[in-house]
Image (cartoon, rainbow, N blue to C red; front, side, top):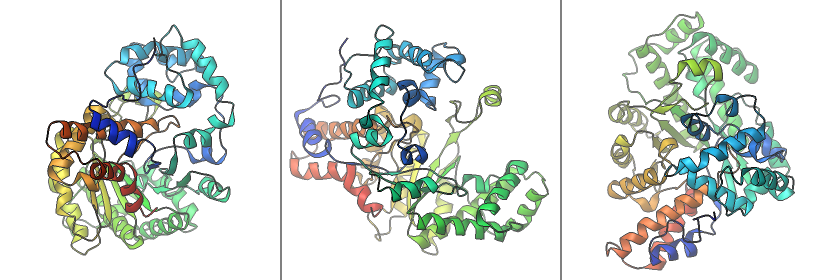
Length: 466
């Protein structure tokens, strides 16, 4: 069966079609948050087959396959790449109304020109056809990015990373430009003292200095921020359940740090206090450098302890959490704003019940110094689907200024995920087009087209100084 995805996919009005085709479709992509491995770009990796390119590390697909009752052998187990792909093809027809159904067929069409709907009937032929195509330069990692007009992408990197692959990409003058993002979650992960001490040892080795005190830790992190900056980094990112607020004298971070080194367990409150103070220090360092900080808030991770023990983290067992966000978020941002050290900030929430909370909070800290200084980030993870994107866009429109929004990102580990930008742009144009059709906005194609192109590309380019 031929695909349902045509030129006007998701565009339900004439005005929406004009906006998308004339103002969004051909713009380059700035993907300012993803988890792509930079070594694959530096080496211009050639995937042996579509299974490697499409299924490895994709926990979205893994969750769907498990739900359908497919054995783990065909998901993360020892089955061949082809066997895993055939099981994914068996799954796809049953993903109707899940974003995977749209993404799958967008990716097949946009990268490989395949307009059939994937199913067990054609899976083997499609596997062979794409696997053969992947050997041509157009389908190596750099070619895949260039096909989608990716101009910049920002990877997610630990402070201990040497960034050698980013340096190689720069020296090779590879397009797109690839910039590192500072992700220091492990630097304040004091929940597990043994793992934390191992991490400190690694950080000390990279910094070529001892880390025996809390001040040593802060100095090491600032040194790594300097290093990332010298390598082109201008963003940081943090994955947390929630932010925190305390009186800064409630505990002593030096004392807490000593307890961790002695492998003494901290209380939940002590852990939160340590995280808050370390984050405040980092945020002030980002401000000094003129960076943008990102906070991904609200995930409850590794819910299935049995499968965590056998498969490890990031294998598809995370979920939406119901943490209290507003008061702590306000307190944390105030602690930085009070000394005018709140840098450009993007806040992402994972619980849709918090949409209005986040959209309202950003307005409290937009002070006129920068357009859209504090951003309500795009629909993330479980919310980067059609309904989630529409709700995020509508909430931001109702409570803030959609016109200042820096737009979509992939948050992906796959080189085939970039049609998600197209998906977002179509959804955006359709919402505005419906408003025009309903008489809620003027049919001013030039002005609304500018708004669309700004959100799709120009706002991000200006905001990040690219």
